[in-house]
Length: 561
Image (cartoon, rainbow, N blue to C red; front, side, top):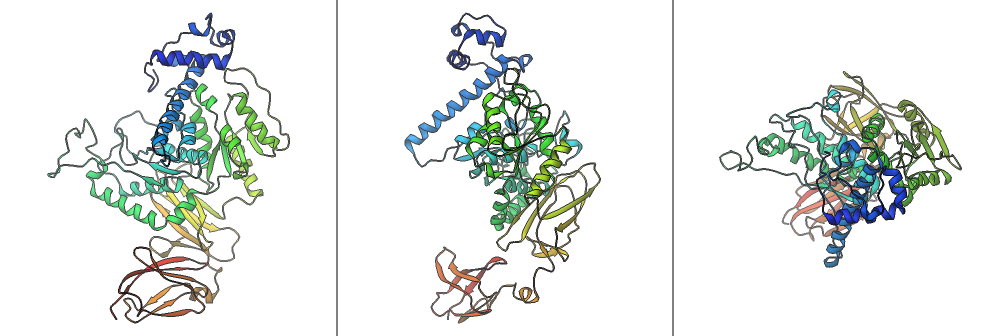
């Protein structure tokens, strides 16, 4: 039997009969599709749990779709009840994204519908690096950890509700029932949390199972029954998690810019094909994986996304191995083409409706309809479209590693100074040597480690799990005068009578208390400004200095006069 598909009540069966009557209208239509001979909808019977040998037939499709419908209706009811008593409440569900990114659909969870209904995107996205028992999975051949649910799941949820807060309230990046590692590399901690935040996670709650004072596991946490090998039993892991979160918070503007990138390539997601095909999500992941390692922020398009969102948010929709679609899904993509959209489609897609009946063909209409047979040709066409719109990354990265495929995933976004901020995570199993270069620049590409504040190599070698977070600039882009005035200086510190601030002319200066109260705010009209502190109470203050190159906040101390 499929996962999470237990028996149901008579109430649910009666509700299913009503749903069938509304969907099919006539019992003859149902009998034709199901291969049955029911006299009317009241006499319909179905064995639940439904057996997997029904996968792909009309009965399977109808029950699976209804199961999603009834769960979604249940959520609507609960949400309305909460809103009765707190109209300001932000409602969400904690959903396991693998129920979308994996192939199963019989469980009733419609991630798209439930995310649409949520004011906060709730989830407990997971990662895994060291399975305690088999069977071996596909990712283990090429990658140092399982990232499919995390990256693909977050890209989908961000596509459905781009502006939602994403709260992972049960963060299983470090340990799951099957994945526990008593010798966990702290670099893995940084890799997973860094990846999650750059893809969409806004906040998270990492679960801890504490030991007793003497170091022994608490009741129920023995090796056989729980999380005795959990992350909080390993100080090096907990320390790295804290350090990683601090670094992410320190560069929150840049991290959020990476999260909020426009997603120019959208992979078409059909719930219909996901229900009818046993390995549909494996097929979509095959395409996602091929597009994932070239600095392009990927997204998804569905019927609802196309109909409800501004279609200028993307440049092209790619359709791959999506044989089954409803007429409504078909119409949404045809309307997108009618309105001038661009679609790349393979020969297998959009051939049948949900019950295997033939559909007419899409036509280009006012848009562009490109037929490509292979993933490599789809990728080439999609990147060519982005190039024609000047929407490819301004950075090129070549990778050399000990594997047959790329392992470093990367993203770029602009900071306040207008420079490219580059985030790289090595997902691969081997060391990877990179060559990072800005396109079309006259000088050497300079990479500055943003966390350490020092210049680093633009040809680094990254170990598995390693994160590389740098600002990328052209060595010839700054004049000598700009280089000289780039640094901010505040002196003396502590100050007792006069505080001197040296910054580029035109910089915005704000001095505020640690509680956030603004003490002084002004724009510089010369390189060095002297401020008398006699009317500023002694204590600790923050000075925020911003210009078109950078923004910095420094702590200062004002002493008694």
